[in-house]
Image (cartoon, rainbow, N blue to C red):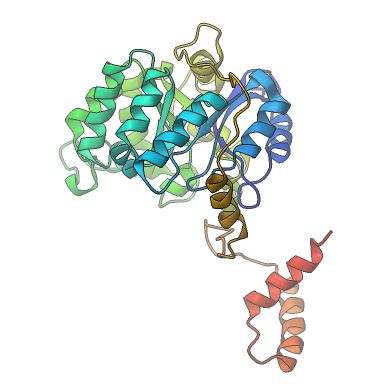
Length: 355
């Protein structure tokens, strides 16, 4: 498929500086790869609504924004959810425990006809059933689940296993309820993070049983492609690789099915004027988020916790470059015997990228 065609929609990306990049950086990546529209979700624990606002200011109706549950108490999280709805989110990204722990937030999102970006809904039977119940109670609500990949089929079947030789310990928590959820017409899967879900190198053949099972229940009308920019770069991946992953995996699809997966389905659900979700994607009035939200963001940004920048394996350097770095480090280490190789490399990178 020609990636320059104005048809690709990214169903799942992030913003949030410094760990998850800026809106301008994401927009530049999208433009480079012919991505015309997309969903942007806040990362867990990072209430950077200024970054979402910047993306909306730049892209207008070509972007949909997804918040997060945030706050120390259920009341605080519900209050902030109501503010986010006024702000104009299209839904929220929720981890499995967050789904179970925030019934009031889920009700508020359902009443507004918004979307649950529900992570790992197959890990807990109560969460799987709660998603079915939520979809039934809120006929305008939608579930779109990112990172919707596992290393076995629904019943634990692995690559090469006989049909009846599955591993129940690796299957979903409640296969029956899970299949019922997948059959629901407003349940959608977003295939993202394949490099992070697999135990094998690209094209990640250990994910094939799961993909086959999910496609058999969802069809090509309810699966979406998500880049997970910028986290893909932590895994040393590129957009063209994650965009073409299903074909590399050997999944057969027609051009129309690929077009639906890479953009058509997300466009219909999130961007069509008469789309499946009815919530307004723009703020009814300016929203002033409370100081405790900004304080929480500030503590996240100011944190000095290390970030695993290459999650696919150790950083590998050309032999000649490694030699030069090691020689320079050994000189520096003579003056400072406690200096580690990693901390010295970090300092060189800090100097090299200083403005």
